[in-house]
Structure formats: C-alpha cells, structure tokens
Amino acid sequence: RKNIGNVNSKINITFLGTLRKRELPTVIFRALSLCLKKDLSFNFKIIGNQQNKESCKWIKKLKSYGNLNEHTLLLGFISEKEKHETLSNSDIFIMLRPDSSETKHLFPSRVPELMSSGNPVILTKTPSFDFFFKENHGVKFISDKNSAEDLSKAIMELASDAKVRFEI
Image (cartoon, rainbow, N blue to C red; front, side, top):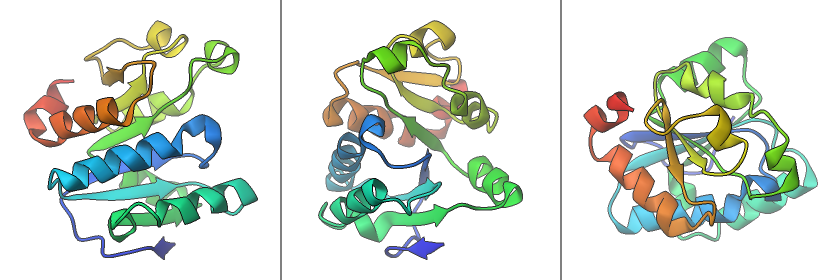
C-alpha cells in the first residue's frame, strides 16, 4: 500500500484494475484534475497490480497532474476482505474503455463486482457495456468519445449529492 499524498478527503472514487492504455488513464487523470479545479474534495483509490512497466509509466504520469497525487492512494493487491471494505466505502467507480473490437467482444466482469457495493459505476457508452448495463441501474454512461470533460461532469454530478448516487 502506497499513499502518494494526503488522503483525508470526502468522496471516494475507485479504480479497480491495472493501469493500461485500454483503461484510458489519461482521461481519468485529466478528469480528476478538472474536478480538483472545481474544488471537489475526494480520494482516488487504485486497487490492483501496478508493478508492471506500463503501469509504472502511468503512475509517473499521474504525478505530473498538478496535485492529483495528493488525493491518490495506490492500494495494489489487497486481501478479499480489504477489497470488500474498500469497495463498500467507495462512492463512485470508474471503468472506461475505447470503442474497439476488444471492448465489443468482452463481458466486463469487474462491473457487477463494483455494482454489488450499491454505488454507481461510470462507464463508457460502448458495445458491450451498453448491451449488458442500463443507464441509471447502477451505471452512469459517458459518451464513447471518452472526454475528460464528460467524465469530470459525471463525477461532479454524482459527487454533488449522495441521493443522486443512491438513486442510480
């Protein structure tokens, strides 16, 4: 477990997986930076293996996004019990994918795990995501353009009112 910065914030935003290009970390980091500029108080928790070359590159890039690193906690691999606790204490999950052949032919098995916490998952509106999941049924979609602005707007909307998160 590695705390990159001071993690005493309000909203818990969680990413579960390995940071790779297909996960669109640049979009996530830019969106979270935009949220900081809008004075959103949050923790950004990353669960999963980040010990490979590509993930390490993304972690270094994260540090270049202003003070985003001060709001980030790298949890790495954690026990099932810790993972369950972390997911239960999360307010918003993020899982983005590009509109690609790989995305069209996969079942995003992490999404039901995230949804079991009762908190919303922000997903890209791409096939197969929009086939398996329905807007406002545990999911908030952003455009398949995967813009940081769209993601930031979705985060701000969900973070602004717990009632909105629970209604989804």
